[in-house]
Image 1 (cartoon, rainbow, N blue to C red):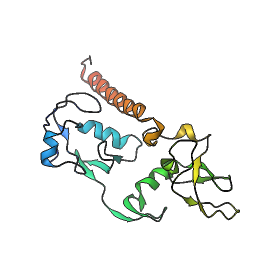
Image 2 (cartoon, rainbow, N blue to C red):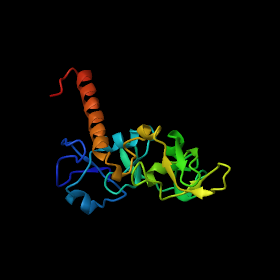
Image 3 (cartoon, one colour):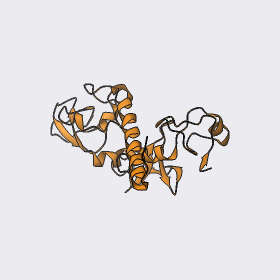
Image 4 (cartoon, rainbow, N blue to C red):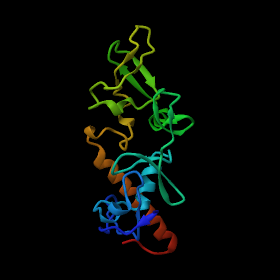
Length: 202
């Protein structure tokens, strides 16, 4: 099922009334897709996947990794060992899990909880911080010379403003701004399409 006509006619992200909605294979069935009151248009799902130029995104309903191919939403389900974090995850590109692929494009400095030194880590350790001030619940190897081994981290205050709001933990309170950015990108697309056709968007 590529698209469907749901019980509600409004996309939960852009609040528009599209002709059809995206079928999300990660958390939809043919039954609940048509009866659910929370649905999303394919354009908004594409905007989510293209937001950080990775071609993948998180399902707004269940947070599973998804991508859009030929107008259809697909689950990212190729599991294996990530060459960066060495954990078993869904592998999305270059033998990297989605988190490490994302982190390799957003390499930030983090402070070690034990030795207080800073280290650049190619993994989004901020995802495991309940707040920007707290240390992560997950660990990463410390490469400083003080014998910390695996320890907890927090993002440096210098790099904190560079955390993509789409990826910040919900406890940081940045979700509303992210969704508004998605809506703004959709409005820009509609405006550009209207200007290209000679029509005005009201």
